[in-house]
Length: 301
Image (tube, rainbow, N blue to C red; front, side):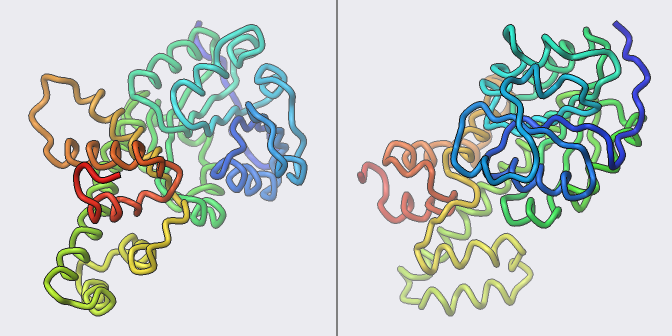
């Protein structure tokens, strides 16, 4: 079914927000505060939902009904499939002319399948995962990585400007997810290299804080390093982006690259390290806990 002609999403437009977790709450709250008529839905109940300033619906189909824009911010492809399918799923209520943006991080092929299902109902689909954690989400400083028909970008630009500092477009549906997975390989490698560097310096008799200060005063002192050095020096692995999500994204990238691709040694190393972290029951700690996996070495529990 060809899509109907939707109107641009502007303050006052009705937004259905699906996924009220650590990232979803600050993002949805920003849109509500910017004047959008927002209704939320979460698959599970938790205490903090009662304090949100916007109403919530009981099912995905209820929250989608009458919405101009539907945004998903869920953990993985299993979760997005759950809210898409079924008697009370998104697809049961989606109408021509509605717009769907999936901001979760799922596999590119999963995003392409969502795009097909949405198009079959005459609606529009974009995959726009985000790079950044809770603090930039609260500040509206996320990096937005988009896939979908770029000529239709003006339809959704206004709400995206509330959520992110910049929007990068990569191609058709699934391209945003591909970009997110590629960037997260660098994220994981950067985290591991920083932790290993401080560990190597310590073994050479250097004081970690002094070495960290030198790194941050060099061209290698990226904003990410400035944030994560504190975790490493204090051995404080309070979650910003969990080790379990890092492992999930690395596995998705490995799957997307396929067995016929060239070797990716960093990807293999990182998947092994984060598998050990999950095996030790540390999956909900921050990804900087990779320092513990390095320190304990192979086979340690």
